Image (cartoon, rainbow, N blue to C red):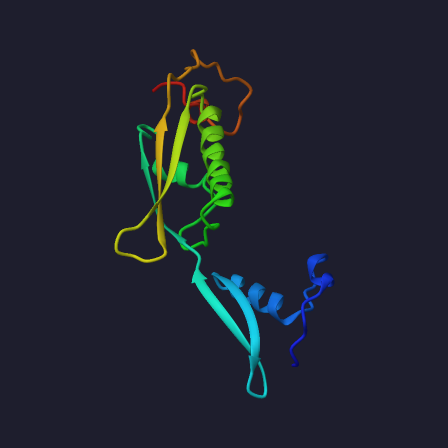
Length: 169
């Protein structure tokens, strides 16, 4: 198809018309940030693409989760291994804060109302473009429940229901 100059229509709406915005969107879809430019060449136009791979999440390491299974914490983080991370800067900081809040909400739902979480994204040494998450948990004091009295259950035994409540540390 012919080269289409980008115009004001590419700044609004979701359908991209210009060739360069479509190329940038296609490259972003496969994990690359691209700075595109053009200049005149023999018999036409030359498109120059400066392409950089986005970082991808490699591993999630969790510390301080004593008594809480690691997979329960990892399940609260919506960015999965292999997924593209936002570029460094305000977008990445916002994404990390969102993930941190997910873990805090989970811990508070488990009765750790004083819980705090630190989530750091660290570039993996020796692996270009790979980033690891380090989740450090400070659970704080637990607010245990007292003795439970379970009544009205007819299908599930009361002991099984009581196991669901994490009332002892």
